[in-house]
Structure formats: structure tokens, C-alpha cells
Length: 277
Ligand code: KIV
Image (cartoon, rainbow, N blue to C red; front, side, top):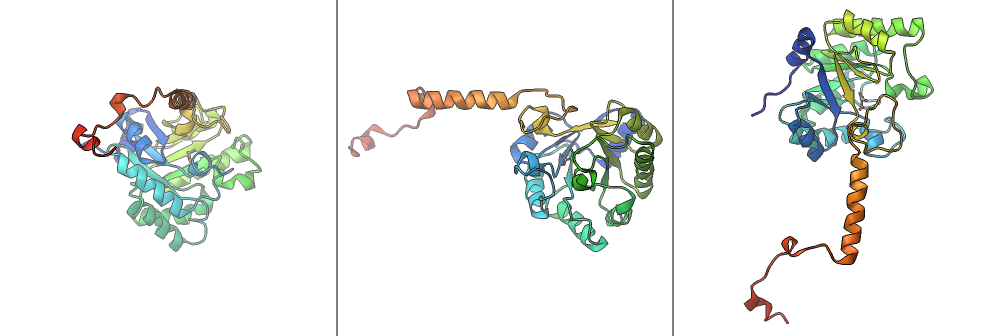
């Protein structure tokens, strides 16, 4: 059985200067492929609202959506740590509701840890989740659930005050006990300062090369999501193009009769067959 990548591996990786790889996953077959390819960690991100469910942002994603997709991912994964993203309004109302919802991602979604967006404003909620023995990943910078407060998906931490707030939040989250922090869309030099100040790893997305690990939305890095291609998302493949080419060939071969061939069909005994005419 593959050894599971754990919270200890996150911390050890930071100590040893080994960079951590994280990708998003939302379903069984893709999660299995990514896990078999040796990725350290799979985030069942609420980005599923955009890349899987077709919403304009992540705000409509529900706990039921997250649990459903977490379970599917977890069934396909043996080695990577599965992180369940807590969706908008699942941790904003009360500490009690936050802990219950985090617990559901572990118990029903079969995740090993959860991720929450935000700093000092939700410190009490994060503390309570950790108090319930649920490992937490923090998320600072461009936190997409705050898109309406930010006035759009914009790079964060560019002014002195904003940069200082992100640094303070990162230190606070470390003190509270999160085991890693996602830094999204912040200047690379700010991510460098934060990564140097922390003993827990930073996982960057649009945060440059100084972070202790990287995370990308899988559909972005495989070239499968064309609605919007972020500047920071390197495309390692053009799977979307391959899918379209395959589907065009399938349509053509279906129309021409080239598919299915003999090897794709099942036989029936001749003695039975003659009785059917
Ligand atoms: O939901 C998500 O996929 C995320 C990543 C972009 C970090 O939060």
C-alpha cells in the first residue's frame, strides 16, 4: 500500500527544502491518475464551482457538493493527502457550524484535512477546527470567496498595508496551528518574505517561485478549461484539444461505419443465431 503524504511530510518537506506539489481534483478517475503520477497532495477545491459545475465564481458551492466530490476523489487516492475545501458560508456563521462542517468533510468526504480562506477574521473558527483534531490548511492573498469584497479577482498585497496584513495573518495562522498556507495571487517578493518567516510551508498559486510548494487547478494545467486562462497557470498539456480531436474522429468513424470494428463486438453461437431469423 502506498504511504500517505501526511501533515508531518508537509513540515518535513519545508525543513528539508523539498518543494511540495499540489493539484486540484474533483472526481475519481482524474484523482486516480494524479495520485498514480505521484502528486503529494490533492485539493478538492471549491473551484469545482467554476471548472466542473460551470458557475461564474465559487460562491454557490454547497457542503453537499463538496462532500460528494471529496468522496469521489478519496476513493481514487492512495498516497496523496486529500484536502477538502470549506465552501462559502460553511464557516462564517458560528464556531459550532464551522466545526460540524469541517468534521463532515473528514467523516463523509473522507478527506484528511480541510482548507479555509482568511486570516484574523476567522482565527477563532480555525482554532476550533484544529481543536477538534482536524488538520487545517490556511489560504491568504486572493481568497476567491471574498471576490465581491475585493471587487473582482485581483492580485492582493500590493500596498504596504495590504502586504503587512497578509504577513501578520500568515504568522497568526502558523501560531494557531495550521500546517500549511496557500498564498494566492500575491507578488513573488511578498511570498518570499512570508515563506522565510514561517516554519510551515507556503503553497503558492500565482505567488512565484519562492513558495515551499505549488498548487494549480488541474483543468488549467492540462489545458482543459478555456473560459479563462490565468496568467500564472502553465499549461503542461493540451488535453482539451486532444479531447476535441478524439470526439471529431469518433463522430466521423461512427458516420462512416469505421467504428465499431470486429474487435469491439460480441459473438453469439451460430446455432442460436439461426433460430433468431
Ligand atoms: O478552490 C481551489 O481550487 C483553490 C486553489 C485555487 C488554491 O482554493
